Amino acid sequence: MKFLLFAYTGLAVFSSALAAVVPKTHLVNVGPNGQLVYDPPFIFTNKGDVVKFIFHPKNHTVTESSFDSPCSKLKDSHGRNIGFDSGFQPVSPIHPVEKVVSVRVLTKQPLWFYCRQTGHCSKGMVFAINPPTRGAHTFDAFKKKALATAGGKRDDEDADLETPHLDPID
Image 1: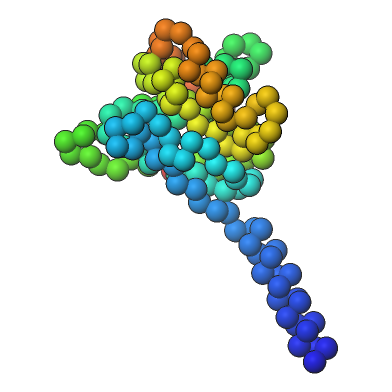
Image 2: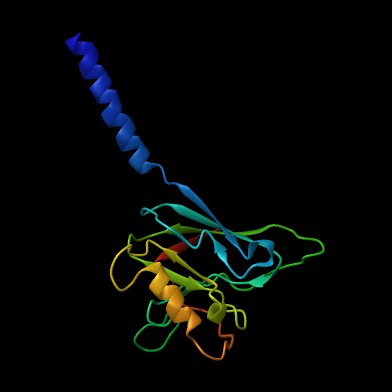
């Protein structure tokens, strides 16, 4: 009986360790049903998890930003683009062909994103990975900042530097 209990306990520990190692895949729809949304609007991941962004008709991006500047590309202290940017992913509403961009998450820190198509961010098209659930930097606070942005101008400059928080998967 002791051997059986030990074997069962060992199996449970092994199963838990294996589950922690296997990355999870998260699906995020970009602009489903003609809406200016990411669905779901935020997710919680572990290091190594994969996020698959599934693009729907029209033309959207998944562009990394910061909490304080939700509708601008993430930049370093020298003003250089350093965040992830999927680039524009046009999908025809007449003949939709599924476009998927997959990335591996490299951090447990909060990551903030927006669609850089003209006016989409200022209409609330924002997304987050691991947003805090309490305090001043929640997803709702991030979306409120995006809705408060004026102009809705598109940021056409392409990100050309490394993306330290996400690893694109081909």
